[in-house]
Image 1 (cartoon, protein in one colour):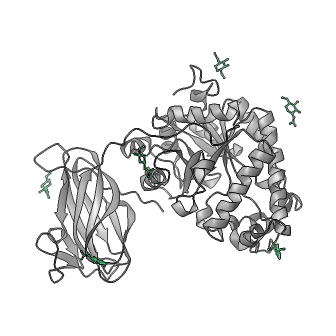
Image 2: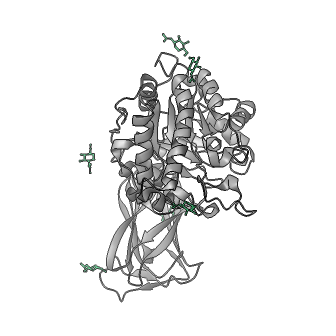
Image 3: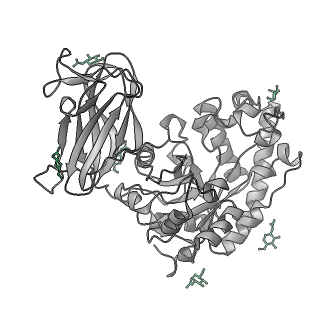
Length: 468
Ligand SMILES: *[C@@H]1O[C@H](CO)[C@@H](O)[C@H](O)[C@H]1NC(C)=O
Ligand SMILES: *[C@@H]1O[C@H](CO)[C@@H](O)[C@H](O)[C@H]1NC(C)=O
Ligand SMILES: *[C@@H]1O[C@H](CO)[C@@H](O)[C@H](O)[C@H]1NC(C)=O
Ligand SMILES: *[C@@H]1O[C@H](CO)[C@@H](O)[C@H](O)[C@H]1NC(C)=O
Ligand SMILES: *[C@@H]1O[C@H](CO)[C@@H](O)[C@H](O)[C@H]1NC(C)=O
Ligand SMILES: *[C@@H]1O[C@H](CO)[C@@H](O)[C@H](O)[C@H]1NC(C)=O
């Protein structure tokens, strides 16, 4: 679910200079709701109450003489407990906004929106209902301050290849976005049908560990990584880590979905509680197995953006099933073991959850990222970008590690959503036509803002042909 607002820029009708304006709810178009005055402290001549049906709305009409990005705030009262409202700009997209319980009039941020020149609408839709709306306020969004990100790797022993990779990402951050595609076959489909080759290839360490190879799985992802690196591309690896034991292996939950929480009774919390536990040993064995594969990349001079324990905060993978503490503990063990026991210095460490309580910390993370799927929505995913920015106080580069629908370059720039790369998921997501049309892919891939394989040649030596 995306939390982009599509409300656009307004200005006061008399002026082309954007300014902060408050719009009273009682003066807007009301449907299924009424004006109230009994709860004191509101602004204007009243507030709007009676949100109790799915179709209840307030619609604000906002004329704008310029196109500009605005911050939206909602002033409300919440005497009936924690609620959500839905905010929609110009009848498209929509964003769920939290309205925590309060017994006084309170103003909360409600996202950003790009107003079009001319008439725009902002609609507040019922969602959970049972709140009182006083007003909305639109303020021109501040131009983002220059980024403060570090391009020094957290691993003090990082090799020259890894250093070149993070340094290159830093050189383009905020200026361009690298195109990326998960899976070699899907990447080749892009080359054939879109006419450009993505700069980044996404691969998976999934089929190297024992609980899968013992059931017939095999992998050539390392060979694919080395080949794409020779083509001048950048490689990123995720790891759909099948639980080492405890797989249900039933028709509903087959062994090959053994990375899902609901496909195994493997318990990360008990496994990590005691280093003499047999299941702790199995986890270490899997890490060592993966280390041997990663060493082949190091030996071949291939640095990678490494994204283990991805989407932990979603809890749908076993490493996130017991909350943040065991997930962070496993991440730290993995980090320490790969670097200090196995001497792996070709990794750029990418974390992939947004919530602060899940974050393993700036000392063990080079890049932060999120995975976002919103079918047919080509917006900039700016609310998630802003959350990641806040997560590290803008000290780490930010990536869109998995997406379904590609982001429009013009919106990325308008919303200042400076994702360093995007990586579209495989199969139907890229070629099915519902998540992305070929025409849109062609327009995205031909944008000056979007870097493709041909445009990053020489990135490792930072020589003249690599755009930066
Ligand atoms: C917005 O502009 C249109 C003309 O472009 C005008 O008819 C309308 O009254 C304006 N609405 C507001 C709320 O200013
Ligand atoms: C606002 O509401 C909160 C909780 O509902 C309450 O604790 C607080 O005292 C109120 N503040 C004012 C200024 O009324
Ligand atoms: C290891 O995990 C399996 C699968 O969840 C479980 O059945 C077993 O009891 C665990 N072993 C220990 C020693 O905790
Ligand atoms: C390391 O790379 C060299 C070529 O650069 C190759 O001959 C050798 O087999 C590789 N070793 C391993 C362990 O992959
Ligand atoms: C965030 O970064 C800014 C700019 O570098 C700095 O002034 C501020 O103290 C930082 N805040 C935190 C919480 O680290
Ligand atoms: C620039 O990069 C290209 C492609 O990787 C390479 O062939 C060439 O030797 C590099 N030139 C310099 C001066 O490093």
